[in-house]
Amino acid sequence: MAQSIATYVLLPGSTADAMEHWHSVFGGELNITRYGDTPMEGMPFEPDPQAVAHATLDTPAGSIAGGDAPLDGKDYAVRDTAYSFLYTTDSADEARGYIAALVDGGGEIGVPFGIAPWGDWDGQGFGRFGVMWAFSCAAGEATGPSGRTDESTEIPTSAG
Image (cartoon, rainbow, N blue to C red; front, side, top):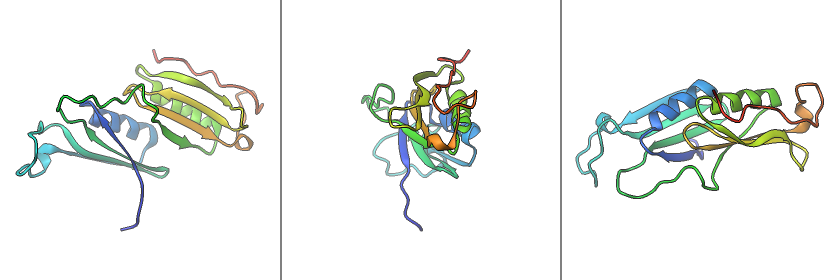
């Protein structure tokens, strides 16, 4: 097996919904395993059989993996952390489409997608599952809606 690195995220009981949503946005191959699908003898805790034990979404751009956070009384914060998923696209239009799809259903824009001080396109938003998504692409690869390379993109701050 070839070596790889994937982002792994624990979500509070919403991993299956999040992975299915991300699959609808990015495509790829989605695999979801619930605790009830696996032998549970010897587990150090008693998980809900419907909880997601492990899920993977393999896309041409990379892999996202995750599972439902254990119900052990600990806070597994997703929102209000310094972590995000960074997606580098080939064009600003591609990034705009992903951003719009991810904020659909209650997400919001954190930093509007536009030309950043370092010269490339960049922007951030929170999807409806609380994950911060950052998008970027080289400025030479893209222009704004009017064809200029120095303009921001207006994307609604929340879906609705």
